[in-house]
Amino acid sequence: MKKIQIGMIGLGTVGTGVAKVLQERAALLEEKTGTRLFLKKVCVQHPDRKRELSFPKGILTRNVHHVLDDPEIQIVLELIGGIHPAKEYIMEALRRGKHVVTANKALLAEEGRDIFRLAEQKKRRVQFEASVGGGIPIIKSLKEGLVSNRIQAILGIINGTSNFILTRMTETGCTFGEALKEAQKRGYAERNPSLDIDGVDSAHKLVILALLGFGQEVPLDRISIEGIRHVSPKDTQYAGELGYRVKLLAIAKQTSQGLELRVQPTLIPKGHPLAFVNGAYNAITVRGDLVGETIFYGEGAGRLPTSSAVLSDLLDLAQRIQERDSPAPPLHFKSGVKRIKPMASLSTRYYFRFSVVDRPGVLSQISRLLGRHRISIASVIQKETHQRRSVPLIMVTHEALERDVHRAIQKIDRLGVVKARSIFLRIEEV
Image (cartoon, rainbow, N blue to C red; front, side):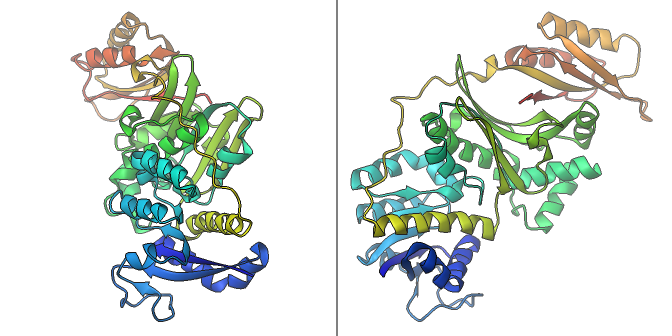
């Protein structure tokens, strides 16, 4: 029976989940893979701290080189997160001929090129299923199951924190702040939730999906990123009345103008499968020229789903080592950065919410400015209010250019009849 020695760096939520499964299901994993998996060393900051799992003496260490320098360790699990020193640990593991499993989407999004290039040179594998979608097998599907397709579009709800917040706002009418506090209380949001609610976490994941789906390495600063802080329960309510749900979408599309990449709160039709994705769940749709539209759905975070993805990578590597499989084929970067479609040239429908004084002629003033910027109105809702100072005016447009929308909104917000900053959200008819 082949034995595979494993080293782990980090023993947080996910690391503890992985170690727990390796301990409790060793016999089952051996039966399924024909391989014995041994967790030889685990690098932690505080080896003497009391933990929910017990380890044999000598496994826990503070010295990362006990993992990286051990010639018997064939696979290193990097589960500490962040850019540094995670990158240095992974690079050193590869230089020493070890395979790597990581869940670190920020690292792969910002420094992945160096890591993948070194892995190719050293003929080692870097597996990263857990970096996007938690337990959803989207990485393997793009690398293997859909490999014969020309990918046309990838759209995803890939941040559970933001999706939970928007779901609660839709279902209860609570404010963004109230929904965020509930998410933090339930453990769905960090104390500092900025990466999640400002769309950066989704953008990191979109970089990885764009690489796999389109063979395109995209710098993070080339993605248009917009979070959900400015979304009001009024917007989720009015969107519902118009037949939509508001979701934070990560969008990658192949277009004649280049690769369209954006993360934004977006209105999607109630009838689309993504509209039914609630709470902390994730879902990703992939459209290929052969397969059409496919959808991947599941828990996008948490100890068990993420541990499942890490273990999937680990078992895959163990089997390949046992079978003396060839090294991974290189990820096919296209030469240079392919043209990224400018956000200003995005053409889509829009949802507007204006806060205006309740007097005759207001609608015509706003409509006139929109018309001057080639923005055609499809529908209008004007709500009554008990406040004498302003009323909400809701508009949905036909397709318009992003640049025209920004110019029109700037001028509309200068009107004396407009009493607050106007809100606009894009509509994705998916």
